[in-house]
Length: 278
Image (cartoon, rainbow, N blue to C red; front, top):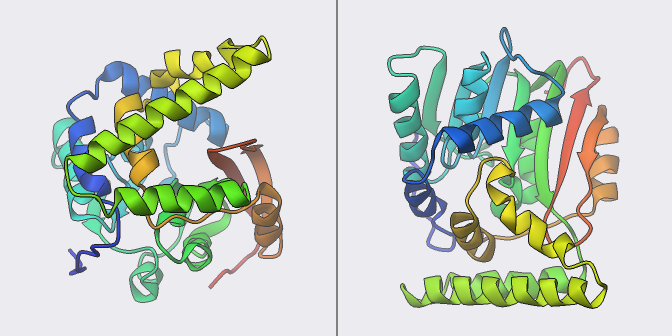
């Protein structure tokens, strides 16, 4: 385990994920499994290696292991490491093909020591490091030739995104439990405004349906994602086009993508074409 000092300017993702584990069930795991299979375009991951950067709750490491991959999970956050380790204990105790440890994606020495993987997965993580482009660079270097790089990065909405920076900054500087009340209050108002906007367009279900089907979205929870959404800090963002251009310049071809049209993350899976990235 790597000795990483706690950064008071970072949102405590691990504490939120620890609460999420109390509602994690087989349905959520199955939903997460289907989501991963869909984006990777593969049903079975046997014989593949899977690096989970910023493993959080450990749910997607668990899914990758269930699909047969040899998994290496790490997270900067102490409690997130504990959550991932707990899922390993529950579902794959004494399993040598799933390693869980603490580490930072922006620690060049740590990252270089990991080797390379068939699949590198970093969903909603790299934009919370405080050095997003550096984190992306270090992450893509861990992808084998012919391997896949699956990232999710917040959409650049211009002025709106800078406004969200302040929303998140304020959450992280409010004392508990005021920050929790702030997050749920802000989230509720945001969803109501979104529903009203689409109701005025005579399409209310565009805003309502995602909330009703939320547990099918990567197996996550509305309540716990709300805290993650409002609190997630540091906070950076990028356009779909800039991410694609950046990867193309480094020998990565876009295989599949879901472009965020407003607030949310671009989901992108890239194929490595280069023989060496180191």
